[in-house]
Structures are given as structure tokens and as C-alpha cells.
Length: 334
Image 1 (tube, rainbow, N blue to C red):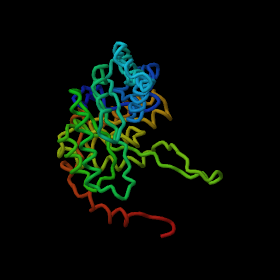
Image 2 (cartoon, helix red, strand yellow):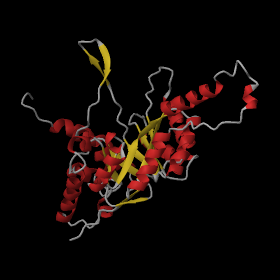
Image 3 (cartoon, rainbow, N blue to C red):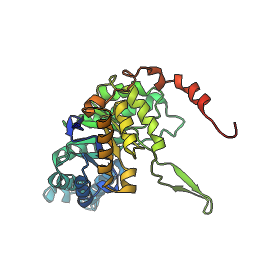
Image 4 (tube, rainbow, N blue to C red):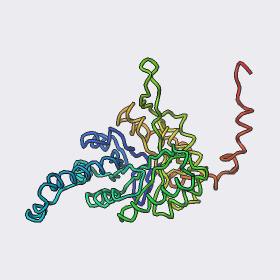
């Protein structure tokens, strides 16, 4: 029995649901080619940060204004010079990736405030990106930030980016909204064509010997899967956007669970960093074998069959399973 693994994400046709998320593995043409040779369906390039764009623009501005206070008339004497204030290396990476790869190339933009820097999204499109992932990384740490203001900032940022481009934009969001379903609908209304669930914030640690706050990168595990699984299952069929899962997919079983919940694709970073590009093939073979054994003809048939709208017990994705989970836990000390 043949199995059709094809899926669609952001209107893009993918050979299967496994996508390389933004990571060091997607930052060079050589590693991108290795991922393609290993069978990856699409790639998300590492993020270009709002701070990088603003730094480049300020540096160019300072260069043009240097000495102007000494001889203002010189500003009109010399012909106007065109400075490239954009992140040329990143734009070149997009262009080179499009030339080198046959799979879709998704650029990534990381920011947290609406502003002029969002115009770089148009340059991503001009460089050849098939789609754009807007990675919104914002921690509302001020006691003056209200939830309504934070949500409005997200929506305004998405609108400011989607107005710049005609290519599809996916939004990588945090899971910390008090009304996630409503926020998802608002982001879709603001122009998002997809949601990537969820943004995995890097948490600081404390170095006891040095008595310093230190950044610490910890790769994901399969135990982190359930947050994305739950919300994808809830949102599937209720919000008209593509749904991508990220954070915690390491095995074929992990990927299958997310597809059953309703994910259109599953993005990998940690598992590829620990096991290498060849892990893509192992995942694809595992998914295919499971589907063949259970006589699923296609990913389209499988996808969302255990979402909240299709599940025989939809309350299992909400509070009803809370008491059951607690009562079913066993320990040698209980």
C-alpha cells in the first residue's frame, strides 16, 4: 500500500510534513544542502533581528552625518550617495538558498515593536523567499504593561509586516496569552496565514560560583510536545490558517501525534542538532510505516482526525482530563 505524505503549509506544497526550523543548521548553504539531501521538506532560515536592522540603519545614518555640523553646505555640493542600510548578508543567504535548493525557503524576522524596520520584509520577498516567519519575542516584564496593550502590540506588528509583502506570513507566538484562541483569530484577521506554536523562550540561569545571571540554552525534549499538541487540536478547524508545531518533536510518534491533532507541518531544531540531518529520513520512514500498518492512505486523511472538533471526547483537551490525570498518577510513595 502506497502512502501519500504530501501536505500544504502556507499555501506551499511540501513532500511531507517535516520542516527544518530556524537553527544554526539552516544558516549556511552547505548545511542547507545537507538537509535537502537528507530529505527535508522545507527550511526556515535563522532569524534576522529587529536590533540588527536598526543598528545597521543607525550606523549608516551616522556615517552620512559625520562632519555635517562643520560644513553644512557640503551636503548640497556632493551628489547624493546611496547607502545600503539593509542586512545584505541575510538577503544574500536568501538568494543563494533559493538558487541552491529545490525545497521552499522561509525567511525569518524576529522583532517585538512595530516600526520602520518591518520594511525589510519586502526585501526578503524581493530576494526570493517563498514565505516569511515573523518570530515575535517579547516578554511583558513591566508592571505597567497590560494584557490588552501586549495583545495590541502583537496585532499591530503583524499588520505592519503583512502590509509589506504578498508572500504568506506565519507568526511564531508565545503560549502565554490568557485567551489563546481569541488571539489566534485576531492574528489571522491581521493578515497572518499561519501560526507556529509555540515560541520557546530561552530562560536565564544563575551561576552560583560567579554569582551572575547567565544565559543557558537547553534543547527540547519530547515532554514539551503536549503544549503545542493541545492548542493545535483546539485551533484546528476554528481558525483559517496553517498550523505548524515546533518544540519537542524528536520521534516518529511525536510527529504523528501532532499531525493527528491537526498540524500541517512539524518543525525540528533540537532533534536535528542532536542527531543530524539524516534523522529526517528516520522520521519519514517511521511515519510512513505507522500509516501503512493502520491503512492510512495519506497525511491529508490523518491530519486533524483527533483534533477537538473531530475527537469523540472533545473535553479531553480542556479541563475534563485534569482530575483524571491527577487520580491516575502512581508513585511508590503514595
